[in-house]
Image (cartoon, rainbow, N blue to C red; front, side):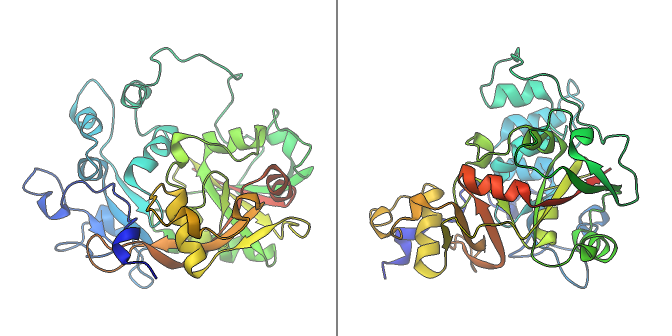
Length: 344
């Protein structure tokens, strides 16, 4: 076993000490490691179930989180009256970085396009490569569970791999993720049966997925633990951490991976694949990758969580991720779509 310092691959997105937030003029944040320094404010408490606890890694105002990650341009944009940017409280999931969540916040309309483009060196005058797509909940979707033709909900849907129909409904988003999970499981998903996988995403990403359901490489997935792919999890609660009031959850049931190569990652195999995909290339990581892992169709293994102690390496967490990393596995996953839950 190599020395632990060779695989110190904890997320390096925290450039400043959370204990210095108040002195720097920012509100404190809740962390999974230390909790909150004092009585819990209402806008942070509503993300946390008092009985089950939070499943997030960080919870706090965007200004505080951006400051911690050294994203000073975004901090300045919140304070700049030129931009209508609300300093709302958000959560950072256990397996995500603050910087990695920025594209999703932009998709949700929480970061203005002008500041997002300049921050990521994107062109100021966007070139439309695709027809303009709607991102509102289709009028046919109501608060009742109803089967819809996917072509009706998504006129640009590529029908080849998806089923003809899927159930759909709209519900109010609740920042108390644990409570929201309980309500959805009680009222909706338990009626589907077993072997469910969930994918939480923004509406923009949902409409894009129905147009092209493939493993995409982009700056938004640079911190994905198993590399580019379509990520799902049996944990509805974990998937909900990637949605918001303008998001959605896709529910898949028992995708047919029988004729595909599935990699079950645990132990050292999990550690080295995850370290490699996150770009933490210690000298011995590449040589210790499991044989044939690069030819797999599906990667299955734990979602990481923070280790104990400041700067500790990530460790396998209690939740599982199932990732379609090839075109064949994406097609199998698409065919298993059963339900879309829209949030408003």
